[in-house]
Image 1 (cartoon, helix red, strand yellow):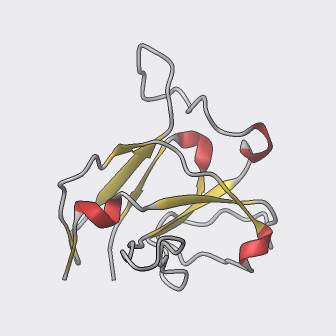
Image 2 (cartoon, rainbow, N blue to C red; image 1 turned 60 degrees about the vertical axis):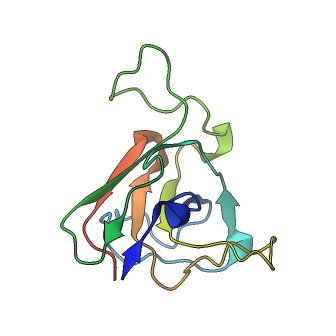
Length: 131
C-alpha cells in the first residue's frame, strides 16, 4: 500500500491546546487525542512534501516541513505564521483523503497519527513508519 501526493496534500498539523502530561513524546509515538473540541487546528503551508511523492509503508524515514519562513530561509528559523496562542504547543500529523462526494470531511485517521508530540515551532518533523 502506498500513500500518494494526493494524501500528502491533506496532512494536517494539529496543535494540542490542553495536554494531559507535560512529559515529551517522541515523534513516532502514539498521540493522546482527547477530543476534537480540545484541539487548536492550524493548517500551515506545507513546504515538503510538495506533491508527486509516493510514501511506501515500511520505508525507513519520512520528513515533513511546514510554515512560512523569513527570507533568506535558514533551517533553524521557526515558521513566522504560527498563531501566537499556539507557539508553545506540540503537533500531530495525520493522513487523510478527500472524497469527491463529501467535501466537508478530510477523512483523517485519528487512530493512527504518523507523528506526534513535536514542537510546532520546529517547522519540520521526521517520522519512521507508516502502518
